[in-house]
Every structure is written in structure tokens, then in C-alpha cells.
Length: 420
Ligand SMILES: [Zn+2]
Image 1 (cartoon, rainbow, N blue to C red):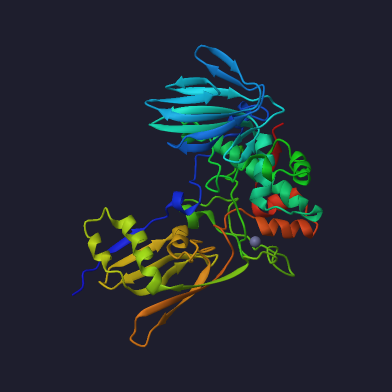
Image 2 (cartoon, rainbow, N blue to C red):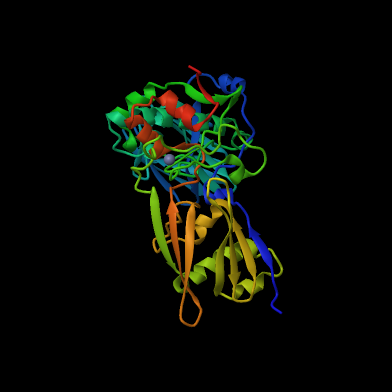
């Protein structure tokens, strides 16, 4: 009799790109942060020296005073023993803690080919160098919004840009106030793990006007900040919070039909329907490496080293139709139940792109000898499906809905408040 092990591939939020559910933040705590608060974004973390170009007029705050930079200078920040050192021309500033660099408000600095507003703090932390950008929230949004909702939005799309700005501002306030951020040296990562931030190069005047029209606005439910989640394309129906996080329903994050009597709002998305064919012979090594990574703490895990897949089947769906789990059985009879958004990471294409969503059907193709050769996926949507469907918001904007109507359509029962 074959040994049977059932291992659970849990919902690995950090890998899967769905933010952890954090404690609801009271709107009164949000208001204490004041108007247009300064936020901290981690631009670099590691051990590799970084070149930073500082504009003329920058000021480096050291233990022995303030050093003014003139003219514009390319500097090098690097680890040195248990310290960081900043080389500016012939001068070197060293700190075992942190160095602050104030940039003139009308100027920008350069790091790794990107240009940023705001100031810089260089930290030494756990044998690593941290480069952290301190910048005003509204200035940060000017960079983030075009990247998050996509470049090239036209006048007819501007209501969707506004609602994206409200969601991103709300999400950012939530990060500032979360316990994890408050004990750290930064609030946000510059990637899609939080919000994609590449500095000034994504800024554009059309977006600037739309973002300014929502200045200081955030989403609230009762007297707490909402979990302002958004995703690219729902595929026709958004997702329920409890399908992703379990526990009680979050009333403003419930599945809504993304459309009207005529058609889906997100129908223009290139991701509305998708297909993928995975060649299991080519894929098996990667596939089992992913699974072993998860189960290696389990003493029975060596049986997963049999790198053949016997069967892959859908174990259940939630009420929106998204797949809740995949039952994967290997050549030794070991069984894995892979659950949640993590499923998307198990079947990358040849470029490493993960499955667009967990809303799919699958068909398995076998060789004449019965070996599992291919898995065909046919799916809908792109992203986790929670909250605002960005392509749906664009579709609503084009059909004449206002940003307030779009906000209340996706976050049922929530409302917009203006903090400043
Ligand atoms: Zn949609």
C-alpha cells in the first residue's frame, strides 16, 4: 500500500500578493497623522553599494554637523564594518545607525536610474544597508497612480483614476498605521507587494489633475479605514473576503457582478479571458521544488522527491466560482492540497509569469501510456479579485459613472471622507 501524506499548501500571502488582513484603523487615528503626512518607502535593502546623485543644496546631517552639497554630486553609500559610509567627493561620513539627507523641495535625487522627490534616510540595520525615501503622501500618489491603473488613460477614463487615487491613499494610510510598519524603518515597499513606485518618471499631468481632485479623500466603513484592495480584472464577478482570509465576512468586500444589463464593465480588459497550457514533463521539477519548499518541515516530505504528477483536480470552488483548492497526487501516492491564491504560483509559463487568477477550469491530457503530459487552463480575470476591479472602474468611467458611484459600486456600504 502506498504511503499517503496530505500536506496543505496554505494561503501564503507574502508570496501570493494578497495583503495580510490588518486590524481596522480608526479614522480618528488617521486624522492624528495630519494633512498630507510624510511616508517612508524602502528603495533599497541589501549589501551592494548604491550610487545616489544628490542635487546642489542637499544637506547631509552628521554627528558633527550639517554638510551642504554643491554642485550636484554622485555619492556612494556602502556598508563598512558595522556601519554605513557615505562618500561625497573627498569626504566620507560614517554612521552605525543612520544618516539623513535633506533634498531641496524643488529638486530631486537619483537612485538606480530613477528620480525621486522627497528626502533620504540611509540606515544600517542587521548587517544591511537600507535606503528609505521620505516623501509627502500626495507626491507619492502622483508616481504610484499611473503605474497602478496603467499609463495612457484618456479623458473618458479620469473617474477611474480618481477612484484609484482614493483607494491607493486609503491603502497607504492603512500601511502607515499598521503595527508592523510603525516598529520598522519604512512603511511601504516600492513594488506590487505594496504599490509600484518608480519615482517621477511615471508622473503625468493628466493624472495629476485627477488625483488633485480627490486630495485628502479616503474610504471608510463606520468609523474605520477600509481595506482598500484593488486588482486588475475580475472577469465579471469580484471576490468575497472570507474566501481569501476566512473568518467573518467584511461587508464592503463582497462579490459584486461587475457589469450592467448589457455587458461586463471589465470586458475591454486584455485579461478578461485567458488560457495557458502547461507541459508537465518540462514543468515537474519546478513544480515539486515549490511543493517541497512548503512541506520540507514535514518529516514525511522525501516522498515528494518522486517528481511525477499522477493527477491534478479541482477540490472545490467558492460562491464566485474561483477555485479554492487543487488536489495534486504524485507518483508515490502523496497528496497535496494547494489552496488559495498560492495556486497561481504553481504553474508559471516559460517566462515565469504566474496564472492570471484562480478563476479557471482545467483539463489534463495524458499520453498513450497514461502519463500526465499537459494541463490546459482556461480562466477569467487577473489578480485576487477583491475590492475594485480596475478595468471595471475604467469601463464604468467610460459609461459616465462618477468616482463616487464607482467607489460605492465595488465597496458596498463604504463611503468617502475628505481628511484635508
Ligand atoms: Zn470586473
